[in-house]
Image (cartoon, rainbow, N blue to C red; front, side):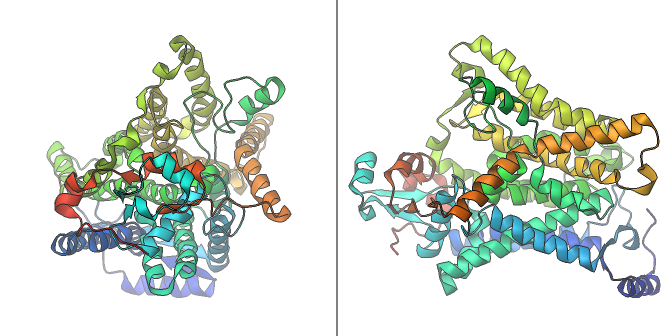
Length: 541
C-alpha cells in the first residue's frame, strides 16, 4: 500500500463517480470504528451500570479512550507508516447493502431473537436474562423468597437467602437500557435491532476481507457447518447409542454450526464473529489486546480458542515490522496491555464469583466408561469436523500461520470438557471455525467469477465437489429451520416463557441448571462484589 498523501480531490471525485453508479464507499477507519463501537458500547454500559461510580466512570473513559486510539491507529502498518485511505475503501452497491440489511434482520428473527417465532431450547434462558436486566436494578441480586413455585423451592432446598446473577450478559445491556426507559417490549425490539446490526457488520466484514460483494457471504454466514450429515445418516439407519443430538453424535464433543449458534447463543456468536473479522482486517498487532480482550466480556470459553490463533496472527509476514524490537513494541502497546489487564480483572473476577458453574470439567476421556473408546471417537470427530474444511482451504491458506494455529487448536479443544454439554468444545471452537467460514465463503464465491469458469473436466469436478460440500454442510441449519418454520406455522407451543424470571421460575425443570450456572452463592465475599460492584442490595421488581 502507498503512504498517505493529499488525495482529497481524488477521493471526492471517486465518491461522486461511485454515487453516480449506485455505489457506496465506506472508509476502513469508519467501518473499523462502527465495529469497535458495537463491541465496546455494552462493556462501557456495564462499567457505568454495574460498577461503583468512581471505578465505573474511570473504566468507561479508559475503554472509550483506548477505542479512540485504536481507531486513529487502524491505518498504520507494522513499521509505523500511514496507509492510504483510498486503498482501503470498501465499495458496495446500494442494492447489495439493502439486501444485506434485510438479510440480517431475517436471520435475527428466524433464529429466535426476540422470540417472535418458535425458538430452540436455550431461549427461555435468553428471554429471562433480558427480562431481569430490565426489571431489576443493577447489579442483579435475587432473593429466594421471591420464588412462588413449591417445586422450585423444594429443588433449591431453601426459601430465603440471596444469590447474585452470574453470566456473560453484556450483549443484552443496550437493549436492557432501552427497556428500563420504555418497557420490556421496547427492549425486545431493541435487541432484534442490535443483533441485526451486529450481523450486518459481519456480512460487510466478510465481503471486505474477501474483496468481493457476493451473496455467498451472508449465505455461508448462516449455513456454514461441519459434515454432521454423515454420522446422522449412519444414526438414521442404525440408531447407535452414542448419538445424543443433531450435532452431538460423539459423546462429550461437539462443534456447532453457525445457525445453531445463532439460534441458541446469539449473544456469543455475533460479537465473536465480528472480533475475528476485525483481526483478519487489521494491518498491525497494536490493538489485538483490545479487540481480542473484548471477547472475554461476551464468551470466556471462546477466548481459550482465540489465544493460540492470535499467536498465528502475530507470526504472519504481514505483521512483521522489520525488526524484533518493533514487533515486540507493537505487541506491548499501552492499548494492548491496559485493555487486556482491565478486561481480565473486571470480567475475570465477575465470572469467578460463581466457580460452581465449571465444577463439571476434566479431560474428555475420563468421562468415558471405557477411556480407550475415546481414541476412535476423537479421530472420527476430527475426520468429520476438521479435516474436510481444512483440506478445501489448504491450497490457498495452508502456509498461513493463522491456518496452522486454527488446525492445531481445533484438534486440541476436544481433549478437554467443561459442563455436561461441553461448552468449552462448542464455544472454544467458534473463533477458528468462523475464520474458516470467512475463508470458505471467499472460495465458494470465486466459483462464480467469469475467469474461473470451468474449462476442463477436472475444473468441473472441482467445482461440483465444492458445491456438493457446501450442500452437505447445510444439513444442521436446514433441520433446525424445518423445526422452527414448521412449529411456527402449526402453532406449536413455544418454550420462551417456561422460565419467566430467574427470581420467580415458572417451570421447575430449569431450576437446577439456573442454580448451577446463573446463581453466584456467597457473592458478598467475592472480590468483584466486595471491591468493584455497586452497593450490594436485594432489588425487587
